[in-house]
Image (cartoon, rainbow, N blue to C red):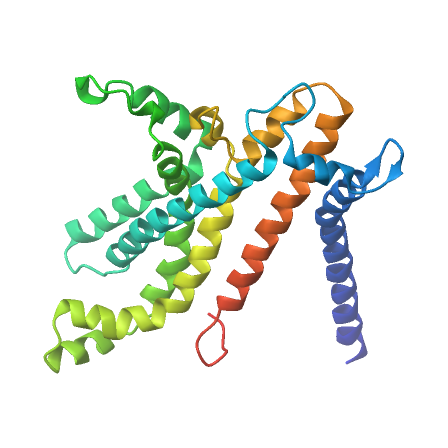
Length: 282
């Protein structure tokens, strides 16, 4: 059928063209960052990357960019642990299929509640934490300076991604597998360890990568909550952009490239974890 073949070829061409445009739009900003980060007043070089070990022109920063990068990695690691723990439990609960109407409605409401951070700005989350933890519940304690505040806020932002990554895998598990394990005498904890965890392990690995990458690049909530002496890499980039001087601007470009490289490396590892143990993909 020549006519059908022609239409198919035209559809493939259009799809390839759209894909090329999307790839260009994604790659162009990154390539521009890399090129400009290597451009110095005297030509080409890595001067801006060397300057990341300083606090910028006129001491624009309170810490070096490398220190901020280390802060980001530590904070993102803690946020990832919290997000995966909470998100995994939420996905486990939401994946169940209650027989009662009230149970199904409760599960739906719970699912919607934990998706709220995706529907509101991260700035809203950060601002909410800022005003809530000033004398919470009337207790004369100010928790806004706690070092755990930023990881908790980042975890709140990352939890929906963890739930949405793990939930489809848990829902796809045949309930008869759990029933068979229970019939053989396995308790709920043993059923979870023998059935759910092995099947969802790869999805959990991918969720870890997503949560870490999102936490590492999170700016909206972190900009409200990060302490001046412990900024994260996105906050430092914002501060450098807001300060005058060619050195600060060049350092912001170089720091942005560093952040992109770290995030890309994390996502590359996460992609390696995607799929089942035999090499198939979900």
